[in-house]
Amino acid sequence: MMTRIVSILVLFSLSALAGDWLTYGHDPQRTGWAFEETKLNPENVSKMVLAWKTKLKNEPLLLSALTAPLVASGISTGKGVRSVVYVVGIKGTIFALDAETGDQLWEHTLKYAVLPGQWQYQGTFVCPNGINATPVIDKSTNTLYMIGANGALYGLDLGSGEVRYGPVQFVAPYSKNWSLNLVNGVIYTVLTQGCGAGISGFYSVDVRDRHHPTIHQMLLSNTNTAGIWGRGGAVIGTNDRVYGGTADGVFDLQQGDYSDTEIAVSLKDLSLLDYYLPFNWQYIRTKDFDLGSASPVFFGWHDRNLLAAGAKEGVIYLLNADNLGGADHQTTVYTSPRYGNDKAACCEGLGIWGGISTVRDPDGRTWLVVPMGGPPAATAKFRLTNGPTPHGSLMAFNVIADPKTQAPILEPVWVSSDLDMPDPAVIANGVVFALSTGSNEDQSGGTEKRMLKSHPASLKAFDLKTGKELYNSGSAMTSWVHFSGLAISNGRVFAVDHDSNVYCFSLPPGVN
Image (cartoon, rainbow, N blue to C red):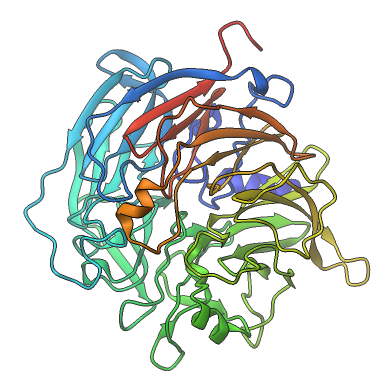
């Protein structure tokens, strides 16, 4: 058990132990678990307040505005050593804010020499001609890495915003790539939906030698299908494998089309290692339940490496992370019943979106926390419920041993109170945080109609053991947010909204 925890920490620089949030979902495995956090706990989190709110000079594009926040402490800036919050605007401006006060420390706007083409979805909410991918921070080199809308990789100095690396052409200009990941000096991302005519798949670039970048690709489609659009992007295990779930399209092994699968590729060169194809993949494709709608999460349980995945169908899969799908590529360790989306609708924000989170509590129990859009399935049975959830909820499960086979299965424990389209959870010291985003994910009627029918977001906190609501930010947030995420650092929780506000929630001075 302890070996698994240590192995997760090894992939992080020791500086992250200060409470940094250097990548989407906290770590390369996308667990959402801020294991360093000690200030916030179930006893005091109800006293949280809005510490500051900063409006940035950033114009949204359709549904998109700012990337999810990142946080790095001990950064030498022009105003002294600071803990700094970083977000990137959809149009290419990087903002650095003082984590304690919200004051802007610097900004840097990228300049492009190329324009977007006229591809199928270009200029829509699917391909908004801007920056989607949350950056990643390398504390060992004092660098924030990001992909510009021109498809080039840039490395910016954390303290000043000066470009120290690149630009190096990494992916197709105006393609849609998701959150960057970093392990051992190599940056990883994924492409999706044919934006910029970029081919869906995994991409990596070795940045250790700035004059000799080495780029690898594993392409998963011959058209614009098989996109990996879960917010976590490339999910990296402690077993030298990279994972992602792909979207709808053709599955044709001979032609190299890997739609509606969970994929494992090599950390070293992105060569294909394994895949899992559900038995009902044709049904999933017909219903547009693509497995790309949510990122899987890698975690250790007893002596096993596991991958938990789920998507719009509302079903959760436990997979052997060292051998996805088994010998026939279609065998799970465990397949849950449907926990949401009884309506079987593809495009109304129902089912699992964004990504699954995990944590191990002090008693050694392993938890999965799943964001579920819409009400629970009629047949879903949980030990604890916390009121009606017509718009969405978090669902929490314990990973336990099957009494007969000792194989891992899921035990449903609790459902949270109502969340209006929940974002993936982040977990710290026995508290589960999530945004009720207020985003209208019903795609009927067009983007403008969706925006008009969205509602202000709110930050909520829940007890890990029971799902009881411990905190609700109420009306503190004044706009909604689409496809985002939270960050936790040193007793502070950071969020963004569609109006380009950055928020910091924390305990009041003097409260422990």
